[in-house]
Length: 567
Image 1 (cartoon, helix red, strand yellow):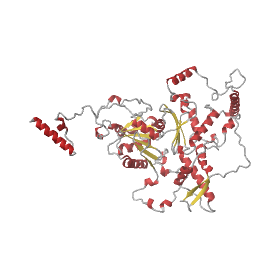
Image 2 (spheres, helix red, strand yellow):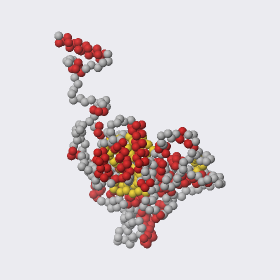
Image 3 (spheres, helix red, strand yellow):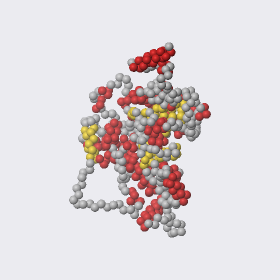
């Protein structure tokens, strides 16, 4: 009887499987011929349900906040899912249908060249005197809701957020963004990371000199072993560049206009489009300054042929359909590089005409390098990372590196800016020393004059460093053991490309790296930013252990949290 019952069960299970019905495990397990699944075999997480994972608390959303945009995406991706800009069209109220009016597209908005330039296209401004924080919070929350619903397509489960922000953001703006993320999106925790450090990570480096040419400011940050050691800034950035382009276009329109016509006032959108399409920067300096300070080097002389035909300079035609009446202007291509010259480098002005917040970019970088220690400067000067929205301007990166190289060769690393009455004598001494150095290099005598000679000794910035036998031995050992490390390259001006701050944040989130600033939702809603400790540096070595849901190591939790560089 038992054998017959077993045969009926097997035949019934086979008939169900033939009809497409999955047999029960109890039916197959009761027969000796049925295969048995090992108990230690685990089901693949790819085909499992999301609720069955024990690492759901580690799911992140990577967000980068800039002055004019918000980027968002997921860890491990090379590019963000979306980049949402801010403008007047994104701030329309319900029932505003002016964008579908045929005449609305032909209307020109006011340019407002000055402090209000591009104010409608900003998410926030560092100067909080005229900033409505409530409006900033509403604009940010609206962008985040569009990001979550249109691009992320996530469920309602809360996820951790890795927030990439510049280190110079005020506490009021930081608190505004944190309030929106904790209350409206129910983030369990937020990890704050600085954009210069993330740009260094995206370049594959541990130390770098990050030059972020942004919208309102240019921020030069020295990063050594993922720590910010020096920071300087200048207002010469994208905002000033857009204003210079608007002035150039207004001048060209006024010159080509009829007598008695009103003065041209192009809009922000027109100047931005012209700067994006035809703006550029001269990759070389206006004059060969190196020949001024190195008279021994002669510039090459090119012979001029009598039968040579000079070609006319190239021109660019820029249409202005919103102008009254619509017109187009032919502008020489060389003049389109003048806004970048005046806004970022200002070669026609003396250095004494600038203050500390209005320095040209190459002088700002040079002062940052001079103020660094020698070992940090050696690492940073050969790992210069130029990022930011304005860095995409053609020829700008090459121009910055060449200007910096000329400054270093002219001044060396002397931290003294002015010698007072002895400035003329000091400059004459430097010129004589450079002439002697050039003559020695030509004759093959690269020796440094000693104190026993009658000649004046070279300054520290022009002397050839002595070779240390210990350094030579360590260098030979490193070459014998393997390829040279990152620290072996230094002492030269060199640029390094980066993928951007968002790519660095994506990599950090994928590798489960815990940052210095980690803010828990319960603690923030209870105490706010006042609950952060005043320590700017804390230990970042923490062990991650997965012990199942609801299990955590109390010893690994922090008793307090800090704001790091934002403190």
